[in-house]
Length: 172
Image (tube, rainbow, N blue to C red; front, side):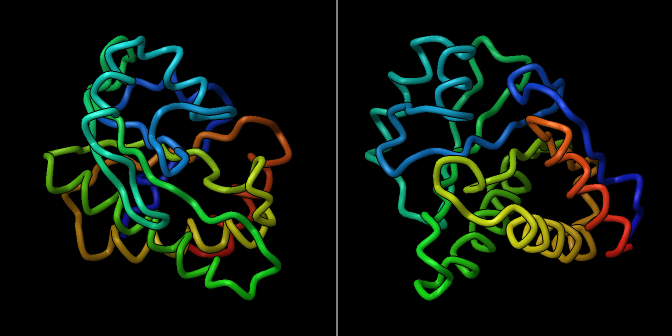
């Protein structure tokens, strides 16, 4: 695994110049707060119109739409779990979000993808735990799928960025 395939940046996921960005969506796929709301606002109303045709998404799954007004050509919508104390399959559901998003990316010819810190906002998933799951799943996927040239973890703030940097450094 080439460690240069993983990059950690602090910034706005809607501004990333990658093939696809991952949206931490809700099950309706019809927009919401946080990352989801920001992506819908930046992509424009065409994204909502396309999302209506997808009829939602289950927690742990992922679906693809065009990026419309985003620099990214595609948006991969995935629904992370709401944290309920760790006794409701949250870890496995979050791992599924990363695996399914990466599978959808590869199936659609994506070479670069940007992830937010899925489920760590309003869904309340503990940041360190979520980061370890995200990094583990991405590293495992990249070992088997070298077609992906770049995976960005886009962090909204410095605390999230520092957590990702620490976990990636420990994992390589």
